[in-house]
Image (tube, rainbow, N blue to C red):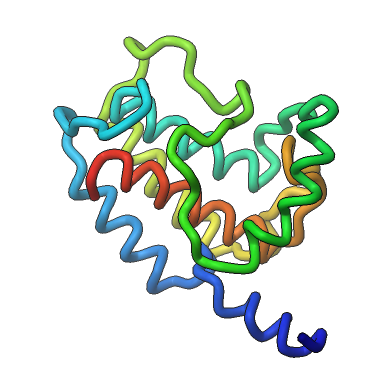
Length: 165
């Protein structure tokens, strides 16, 4: 594969900078309700919304998690091309940085968390590359804005599928 064909292929991977896809994602979020049941995992729907917002805050540099320890940090660098080169969804129960989880489920209000997530998607999609963090991802290391956008779509999609939407 030539460098040009690889660039063209990567450009077609679903990402949250695509305003149409961001709109579809927000519509899926609106299909959730506070009694939505998860198909796997252990977070409530409100905790999941807060977790997705934290992921976007990481992508925008609001939250700067520490790097994963060896050997996870090396493994992340090795599988990075596999994750960002296609639309394959994230696996169930994929690991995540502890800084992206709300410790207390009683402090997660569904409507408030849904509003925060939609606002974070709007900010990320509207500001584009300019809002992306230069801080390395805890698992994948340094990411380009387009990679942040791919990862943010995959992450939110993963959790929406977790709740059947």
